[in-house]
Image (tube, rainbow, N blue to C red; front, side, top):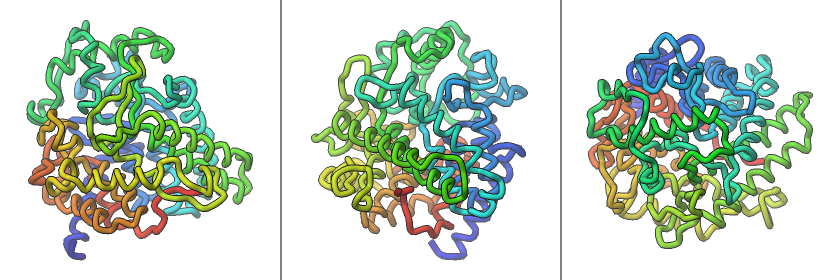
Amino acid sequence: MHKDVEQVAVDAAARVLDTNWTGRHTVPATGLYPHQWSWDSAFVAIGNRHREPARARAELVTLLDAQWADGRVPQIVYDVGRDDDYAPGAGFWRSETSGLVQPPVHAWAAWLVHCADPAGSAREGFFASVYPRLVRWHEYLHVRRAGGVGLPVAKHPWETGTDNSPLWDVALERVPPEARTPIRRPDLRHAGSGERPGGRDYRRYYRLAEAYRDAGCADDLPIGFAMVCPLFASVLAVSELALARMVTALSDGGGSAPSAAGGAHEAAAARVIAALDKHLWDEELGLYVALDDTTGERVHRATVNGLVPLLLATPLAPGSAMGPEGAVGVGAGRAERMLATLAGPGFLGGGPFLPSTSREDPAFDPALYWRGPAWFNMSWLLQRAVRARGRDDLAARLKGHFTVAEPEGFPEYVDPDTGAGRGTRQFSWTAALTLDMLLSEEIEVLPRP
């Protein structure tokens, strides 16, 4: 991207984030998504660290202020004055937050935000504020959400962040497409029906959400859906490594985190990686897949979720707690296989942009939410992963995804073949990750111990 074009994109992205900033947090989009979303705020903070590091810190602190007593960080923190603009809202949950969660990118985001402005972070006591809360968040996932293979389970497709992925189809078929709650679809005012989940899917979504809510959001009661997602597990492992780095920073700054805690976070990451490697690898597809915790069956579907473990394939220094000779559990052979899958016809080899579902999957639809469209956060995650593996060719391809962000109005997602914008526009994480892609100069790709 030419420097002048880059500056236009940076300025436009900054305007999107300024427009969507409420004074305490950033909404994903002022129309379709008028509340604070969990992993959206993490991605927004990652982008804002380059221009407004204090705002980036506030973004994460505000989200963590809504943490539940059991440690969970809620999927949505509602602006109750706008309860009619998004469904289901606070009235449905009978709470100012959703009882569901989203992928745990937050500790990684906090680490990157700190690195952008260490002096400001120290002055505000940022790590001292967020570290204990992030520890409780991870403990919630490791303990209360632990599934049969030792990885956290999602109780609802909305928790995976990839709501309408084919990975959840078989499990959702067991959920009756009936709900007691009248289903409103304000989302269809902002995106075409061919770009959003259908009514039958929404009835199942509501049925699951009702069951979870009515059970008091208790995680030990079955509600008909319990899935292990490779994306969710992978970012949890990365965030554990980020917590290990926080321990070092707190110790160096005279903080109260015990030095032994760093090793405990590395060990937690190692356990997640080992479980991923043992239970979720699909040799035929050449990537990781989801697992149905109810049946114990793996889901033989190729999606972008199964490529995100590439983040964990970067070798660490010898002597790390991550395994023999510092090796990460996702071994080099499987990393190379995933790179081949990423470069192959189902993904980047079949078109200019990274689809959310393989082009070779029968459910592939270039327009429909998480069943084909390219998402900027997935390209951002995998761009970092392939850089760490020395694949500059693939890194350049993934960075090229961001060339359509500004011309298409910072869309929620795009057609993987044409780059045409889909979903809502002026979407915050698209703007934020465009900033990070264009402004980040850090050499370190992951929060390695």
